[in-house]
Length: 521
Image (cartoon, rainbow, N blue to C red; front, top):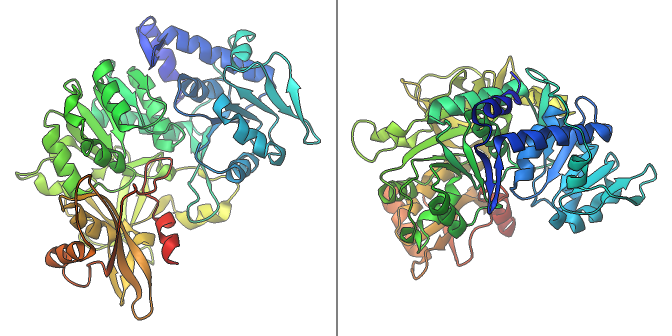
């Protein structure tokens, strides 16, 4: 199982056809492979050895594809960096991963120069379109290397033969967001990511006719996994620098996009766009979503707005490469015998075993709520340089996700909540997802987040932060009354904040409840 094999196969089959499109830049499969081989050769010329780490700091771009494949082609391992992290966290990740080389967009030069003296393992930074790269000597002094840039590196290198790393060899270290503590490095192997690609192609009918839009961040495990999946499938890859609603809609129309992946927050913002109906989305045939739960009201709305599009959902986490369950398009319906499955995140994906366990990690029966655990070839190798954390989450091959849920008699998994997001109020567990789904049923609501805040009597109280749609009006009492009607008193928010600005989201598009909680601690 070599991740690079998918690229070599596509060159044989589609040599002169389009592989990558970035605005007006168009790259064929043969050109893509040549640049990958030259990048690999250039990195080897700089001294890269097997398993050496190479990091990337950039927005989505063709160079991100070259990075993913070029580093592996040379026998190294990738470390994609969240481009929204502060300099201190970036320096920590580079040091913790013992990264030797950093490829970066010129835009991030000020950020990099700000932390460069703290990145003790880093030897070189190679910028896009610059006339020089930075080298850090043993004393930590920044020096300029003459005539070296990303394009110079490729231009002066001889193409390297694929080093054929694969199977259990390390493919990359993907760092968790660190929103609840120090970021942890998730080590994924070639086998992990090849297996994910095979499952993605099987589940969503991806093939050489697919025109795929990359709008989610490529630094995230899901975005990186999609690179490998789409290259393996032979899809034409349309690349947007970042997610912006109008840019996504315009790209779907311009490039006749057939498929894309979005996180629920992005889908909500897409369907709430006032100009949504102004774009021709007739070529679009599938949208996959994941990373967090989808508000049922928002999903119902998008199903009505895009009746010709098949929707699928994947559930997982970085530690699962990243998918564990899959909900097929046949269950994304609002009526009929399959309608009730829309509340689930699907069944175990190809090769995965999924079970529900209690605190003693004993297997629970159908319908009983516990922690979701997963076993299979998608389970990570472990946390980089953190055996204690690895032992806490993996036991006898089972990875314990930290998500609360249950399975029905037919194997469909239903997520109740992130265990850490459960609100325990007066000794009663309240799932924030359930309350959020209720609030999203209100026509006035664009976004919401529910979490617990300190309470002197109940320990925690249910609190909601709500963003309204443009030209809509709604009060705290109306939100609470709506929830009491549909959920009962004990699950309903005790307080509601109505705000105008959009909710804070992470680099991957997830609503950052930890940031919202800070106002109430």
